[in-house]
Length: 297
Image 1 (cartoon, rainbow, N blue to C red):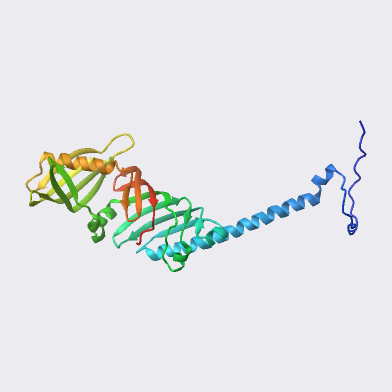
Image 2 (image 1 turned 90 degrees about the vertical axis):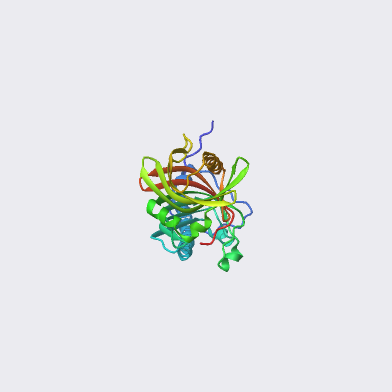
């Protein structure tokens, strides 16, 4: 075995120009990898990376602030809005983002539809940049997101009396012993007394065999959970001639079909309620959405 002589101590020396040689042989020295020069180079690389990261965060923050302003302009009212666009400059120039986080409180749309709280996270977003330049946001690809929504009892009832929600209320066509009976909600109120229960007071019009009648009712139910189906605890007719058992049975079947739908379609979006927590005077829901196009507010 041949013992290598110890490496000479490092000492400062004047900088000399390298010889013009096609090959330059530098002998291995273990001290070179722990020298102050090596550490300075590592720190400089780390500093450059940090600077690039900070620059990217500045780009994200600028875009996020612009998105907040755009969202605020489309809402009738908002107590608080925060938007975080996860992307970089190159992707932004292509209208792309790795994801978008949104949180807001006291959000009002269509004058009377208010959300106490909304927290949303999307997956990858790809928009038509040309259309966005002219103020119209179009998605090149559908976007998936998960959202937590908090609704207050007072806000729900305010929305139920708004022209917008009343215009969206569907007519339910029921098959009752081979005959089609149509139910159209007229007025609906919701109360959240606690203990996971929902109480409804309402009036519906019933169109049956060429005749139309009004019926007022009170219903108490428990919404579906992960462990139990919808439970109707009571149903009482308060005004009108009452309702036949066959119509009630057909109505419950229709409700079951709606609840078991994989998604609820609405204005270019599809919703699925993953979880619902009913508390006294408030509802908390976890909603999965599939957005084909962003609706106008």
